[in-house]
Image (cartoon, rainbow, N blue to C red; front, side):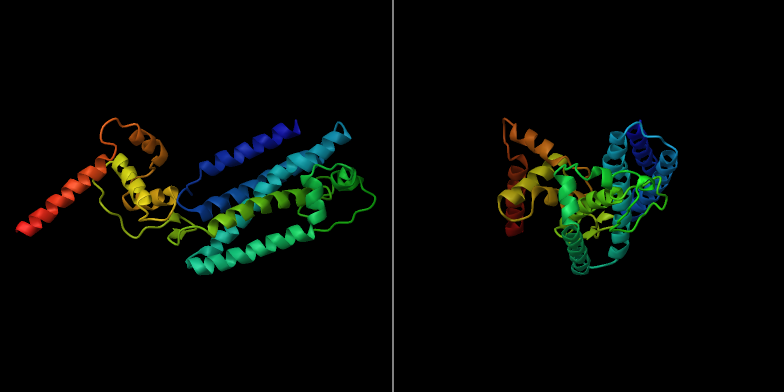
Length: 276
């Protein structure tokens, strides 16, 4: 019952955030999501406050696995929005300085909480009755973090720690990716291209060009990155690069059709300029 309730809350947040007019701004997206998840957590707490668990196992499962799903998303979206706010109008070097500092703080968190993180990740259960039961039923409490929920009927000693740990892992993955983003990326709106070029070719011709540039070692970037940049420059998005490339490879005649066309056109231009 509780798992279904949380699943519905998660689905509702996603549905409501999809309906918000924030598609062009990641900052607005994550700010909206953080607020919606906060509302969902509040609703869950109200529901749980008067809920009678059918067994100790149900109570432990709720605080150890079910509720942290919401807490993780709430924490993650809040920090994504916070980071995006800090990134506004920063150069890549300045942005990366912030990212590295954040990654160092995340590493420090896992070092400080190593024992509990290991306990959770390895699936230990011997301290579950201490960590994952209502604080209202505990005679002795030794908290090593600040409680988000102040009502002892709706929280346990380590439930928020699980949500925070899962969020920090996800955040770390995101931050590692940020360090390798193209300098043209604006963290609030994605890849930014100054101006567009009027490409008269087809998506298939663009994909052939992308692979030609890569295969000839003229560009050392990944196919994904080249596709993203050129797709933006030529205003052809979404560009289904790999799907189109498979069709190019299946050609029976003239697999390098664009290259042949470009070679003929270039030779024609050279001849024309020499003779004029």
